[in-house]
Every structure is written in structure tokens, then in C-alpha cells.
Amino acid sequence: MGLQTVLGLRQRGFFIPYRYADTLPKSGTGPDYIKPYAPMLAAMAAKENEMAALVQNINGYGDDLKKLGDQPPPAPRWTQDWFPVLDAAAAYTIVRQTKPKRIVEVGSGHSTRFMAQAISDEKCQTEFTAIDPQPRAVIQGLDIEFIRATLANASAAPFENLQAGDILFIDSSHILMPGSDVDDLFNRILPSLPAGVLVHIHDIFLPDDYPASWAWRGYNEQQAIPSMVLSGGYEIVFSSHYVRTHVATMLSGTVLDQLALLDTAFETSLWLRKMS
Image 1 (tube, rainbow, N blue to C red):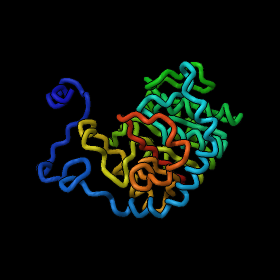
Image 2 (cartoon, rainbow, N blue to C red):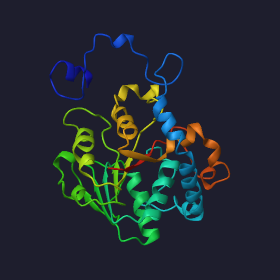
Image 3 (cartoon, rainbow, N blue to C red):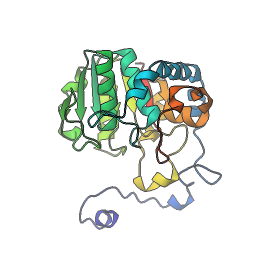
Image 4 (cartoon, rainbow, N blue to C red):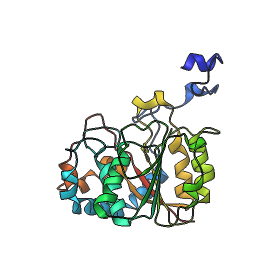
């Protein structure tokens, strides 16, 4: 793929020449790696009480969560590393608690299953629209509107109807380049949303860097998030990565200790609330 792109045979990704690239710290964590982003670390630490409250709310749904996983697709299951335990339990809980009128999801699969289950269990009257050309798990059969398309080829109408208390759920390409889906989401759709919309972004390792094992992916989506949060435009609601890696003691004794977490899984949901 890389050779085809560099030689101009076919666009299969992005190659960005930078003459000082060999002087940059490595992607990952450790003495020779990119340091944690201190302002984001402080911003997340300031929200620990709110995150702990959500963990307790998750635990309140413990009996319902433990029932999940035994039914065939498209029912949700825990034994997968696409949308693992803390991500799935948080999404399930937030949907049941907030009872949004609308959810628009860009990038679908296991997350779709868990949120659809939450809607069903809570008996919400939620309009759920999922946009994805190729979901990572079977979602046919769920009570949702499924648009099999890239974001660029999907209608803008679902986003235009989002209001305070609704959810925009983002788990797309994770590549912020001109014209990419992340570009459209961050620089066109998010600015147009009203205050109060809940925004979920997946595969966010802040306040840390992406793991070294993911360097080949070229993800750069999370580099845009600190300025969104630290400028006051968005409020941190919950971070799976921060909770699991920085304050894991708040999970002790909860249902989250009892649900199957694969060794290959990274819990990386970031929930924000638009403030202005």
C-alpha cells in the first residue's frame, strides 16, 4: 500500500515528507517516547469525581450487563476487542441514563449493538442512525436506520437534527487529513452542533500518545482534541483510557471486574459535551 502511494500508482494512504522526522520522539510511552500531554492530564484529573460517578452508575446496571453476551448476532458480546468492556458499559449506561432522542453513529459494529441494546432495555424512543460502508460486526436486524456509505456519500440530514442531549458517536477512520471523514466531522459537523450534544470519539488514548504497536496505522485524530477541550468548547464527561490506566482503583468491586476483557483490548472511549 505504501509503495503504491509513494509511486503515484494508487492512493492507498498518506505519505508526508518531513526533513526532521528522525529527530522526533517515538510514538508510544517511555523515556524516549512522546510525553503525556500535561494539560489534558490535568483536565482529566479535574473530572475524576464525575468519572467515578459514572462508574457507579455502570455498576447500577450490573445485573443487566452480566446478562449480555450469550445471544447470537446482532446481540452484543464482551468477547471482542473492537469495543471492549469499559467502552461498551459506559456507552450502554450513558444511553440508558440520558435517553437521547437521536443517536448518529459514524463507524459502526459492536458499539451499535450495545447502544441498540441500551435503547431496548430502557424502552427509549430513540432514533438511531448508523453510517458505515462496512461495519466491523453484523448490525442487520437491529432497530436502527443503517446507511451503508462513507460519510462523504451520506446525507447531512441526520446531523442537522441533533439537539442538546442527543449523541454524535464517532469511530471512523481516525485520520485527520484534508477531505477525510475526521476533517468533515471536526471542522464542519461538530462546529455546527448546538451546545449540549454529547460527542463520543473512539480510540483516544489521551492524555497519553497512541501505543507504539499502533504507529503503523498513522492515526492522528486525537491531536485535535486538546485544543477543543482546553479552549472551553467541550467538557470532558468520561475517558475509558484515563480511568483504566490512571485511576483503575475506582473500578474495584464493580461489575467491570467481572466482565470479560481480552488481553488484546484497549479501552479508549472519550465522551465530551459540547459547551458552545
